[in-house]
Length: 111
Image 1 (cartoon, one colour):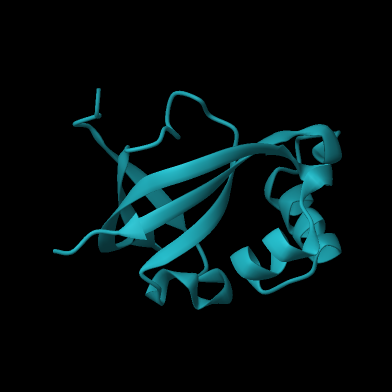
Image 2 (image 1 turned 120 degrees about the horizontal axis):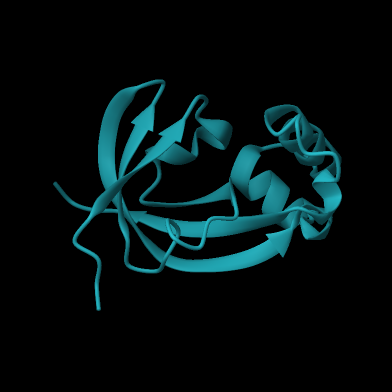
Protein backbone atom coordinates (compact mmCIF):
# COMPACT_ATOMS: atom_id res chain seq x y z
CA UNK A 1 0.00 0.00 0.00
CA UNK A 2 1.37 3.38 -0.97
CA UNK A 3 2.00 5.93 1.76
CA UNK A 4 -0.05 9.13 1.86
CA UNK A 5 2.20 10.82 4.41
CA UNK A 6 4.71 13.28 2.99
CA UNK A 7 8.03 13.27 4.83
CA UNK A 8 10.75 15.92 4.91
CA UNK A 9 14.11 15.32 3.26
CA UNK A 10 16.50 18.03 4.36
CA UNK A 11 19.80 18.96 2.77
CA UNK A 12 22.29 21.46 4.15
CA UNK A 13 24.26 21.38 0.91
CA UNK A 14 23.45 20.54 -2.71
CA UNK A 15 26.10 17.84 -3.07
CA UNK A 16 27.24 17.41 -6.69
CA UNK A 17 24.37 19.76 -7.69
CA UNK A 18 22.16 16.69 -7.60
CA UNK A 19 19.04 18.60 -6.58
CA UNK A 20 18.87 20.14 -10.06
CA UNK A 21 18.41 16.69 -11.63
CA UNK A 22 15.21 14.79 -12.42
CA UNK A 23 16.61 11.79 -10.50
CA UNK A 24 19.23 11.77 -7.75
CA UNK A 25 20.65 9.68 -4.95
CA UNK A 26 21.01 10.38 -1.27
CA UNK A 27 22.92 8.61 1.49
CA UNK A 28 20.90 8.79 4.71
CA UNK A 29 21.31 7.11 8.09
CA UNK A 30 19.31 3.87 8.10
CA UNK A 31 15.70 4.45 9.10
CA UNK A 32 13.32 1.67 7.97
CA UNK A 33 10.26 3.62 9.13
CA UNK A 34 11.04 6.69 7.02
CA UNK A 35 12.83 5.44 3.91
CA UNK A 36 10.45 3.18 1.99
CA UNK A 37 9.92 2.76 -1.73
CA UNK A 38 7.02 4.99 -2.94
CA UNK A 39 7.24 7.34 0.07
CA UNK A 40 6.95 11.01 -0.85
CA UNK A 41 9.29 13.72 0.43
CA UNK A 42 9.30 17.49 0.52
CA UNK A 43 12.89 18.22 -0.48
CA UNK A 44 14.33 21.20 1.40
CA UNK A 45 17.68 22.90 0.95
CA UNK A 46 18.82 24.94 3.96
CA UNK A 47 15.21 25.07 5.17
CA UNK A 48 13.75 26.19 1.83
CA UNK A 49 11.29 23.96 0.02
CA UNK A 50 12.45 23.01 -3.49
CA UNK A 51 10.16 20.24 -4.78
CA UNK A 52 8.51 16.93 -3.93
CA UNK A 53 10.26 13.66 -4.73
CA UNK A 54 9.49 9.96 -4.49
CA UNK A 55 11.77 7.06 -3.55
CA UNK A 56 11.74 4.65 -6.49
CA UNK A 57 14.46 2.34 -5.20
CA UNK A 58 16.77 1.93 -2.22
CA UNK A 59 19.62 -0.18 -0.96
CA UNK A 60 20.84 -0.77 2.58
CA UNK A 61 24.61 -0.45 2.80
CA UNK A 62 27.30 -0.18 5.41
CA UNK A 63 29.50 2.91 5.17
CA UNK A 64 32.52 0.69 4.46
CA UNK A 65 30.71 -0.64 1.36
CA UNK A 66 30.34 2.79 -0.23
CA UNK A 67 32.52 2.72 -3.33
CA UNK A 68 33.81 5.50 -5.57
CA UNK A 69 30.89 5.01 -7.98
CA UNK A 70 28.33 5.71 -5.24
CA UNK A 71 30.44 8.43 -3.60
CA UNK A 72 31.14 10.49 -6.72
CA UNK A 73 27.59 10.27 -8.11
CA UNK A 74 26.04 11.23 -4.77
CA UNK A 75 28.44 13.92 -3.57
CA UNK A 76 31.13 14.61 -6.16
CA UNK A 77 33.76 13.38 -3.69
CA UNK A 78 35.79 10.16 -3.36
CA UNK A 79 34.87 7.22 -1.12
CA UNK A 80 37.46 8.31 1.46
CA UNK A 81 36.12 11.87 1.50
CA UNK A 82 32.52 10.66 1.85
CA UNK A 83 33.43 8.40 4.79
CA UNK A 84 35.14 11.40 6.38
CA UNK A 85 32.05 13.59 5.78
CA UNK A 86 29.75 10.93 7.28
CA UNK A 87 32.01 10.58 10.33
CA UNK A 88 31.75 14.36 10.89
CA UNK A 89 27.97 14.43 10.39
CA UNK A 90 27.50 11.46 12.75
CA UNK A 91 30.34 12.28 15.13
CA UNK A 92 28.68 10.46 18.05
CA UNK A 93 28.92 7.23 16.08
CA UNK A 94 32.14 5.47 17.12
CA UNK A 95 32.06 2.83 14.35
CA UNK A 96 31.04 4.73 11.21
CA UNK A 97 32.42 2.06 8.85
CA UNK A 98 29.95 -0.54 10.18
CA UNK A 99 27.00 1.83 10.39
CA UNK A 100 23.96 1.09 8.21
CA UNK A 101 22.85 3.68 5.69
CA UNK A 102 20.11 3.90 3.12
CA UNK A 103 21.21 4.67 -0.43
CA UNK A 104 18.09 6.26 -1.86
CA UNK A 105 17.14 6.74 -5.50
CA UNK A 106 14.63 9.56 -5.77
CA UNK A 107 12.74 11.09 -8.69
CA UNK A 108 11.46 14.63 -8.70
CA UNK A 109 7.68 14.83 -9.20
CA UNK A 110 6.18 17.27 -11.69
CA UNK A 111 4.40 20.09 -9.88
